[in-house]
Image (cartoon, rainbow, N blue to C red; front, side, top):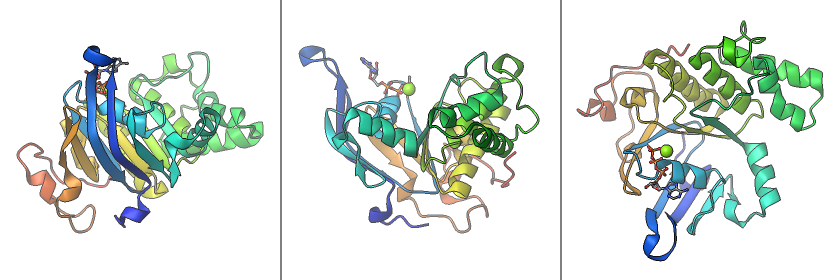
Length: 263
Ligand SMILES: Nc1ncnc2c1ncn2[C@@H]1O[C@H](COP(=O)(O)OP(=O)(O)OP(=O)(O)O)[C@@H](O)[C@H]1O
Ligand SMILES: [Mg+2]
């Protein structure tokens, strides 16, 4: 896995952001620079108010920073006009949210096919791709159910399948497991890691749950808008699933070895 700076899928440089003006301004991000690479799941952690959602929104093109630059797939995001930015996000990025954002009246297969329908893909082809995406998240037998008939974990897997349908190179998830119990949280996070590995996607996930860290290639901790820990700086372990790696040996993350079983 290359961590060559020129191979980064996302490069953020000198990000500064705050809310409000003048004396009422709340500073949130302070000269933050980070890079992300394809094929990795990064967990972004930190106390409430530390700036995680703000950073994710800036990296994903939803929020323009006060200053600083974001390059995504070699495109300077904030140099794009609003329509170009929208098209870029549609073509290259997927999003998963805390509360699933599903339409109550649509079946799982309709939810997942929807972005393709909007994109003008033929209906039968959109349906076939939706089936494949739902099978990938383990919902092959639940495709014709509506959100009210699905568990929280299943709903989030539908949302992940919908995010996957356009084959995004970048996947952003803001607290995708916070409405789920621990078993479903593990399933969802393992799925996000699998997507990073098998699709080569860059997956950035905000979470508060320390139990999920064993699934991630990288952990970034924010405090008051600054990076206070980035496991990228730690020595890389050997083969990905072999043994407890160095970062997991810290008292804050006493996790057992990953088994490699995802679903
Ligand atoms: N739209 C906004 N207007 C004003 N202040 C905001 C706005 N959005 C966020 N903030 C403030 O910016 C700071 C960082 O917020 P942010 O949502 O990025 O934190 P977070 O780390 O995601 O927190 P949480 O874990 O609670 O989701 C907080 O102090 C918050 O109150
Ligand atoms: Mg947040």
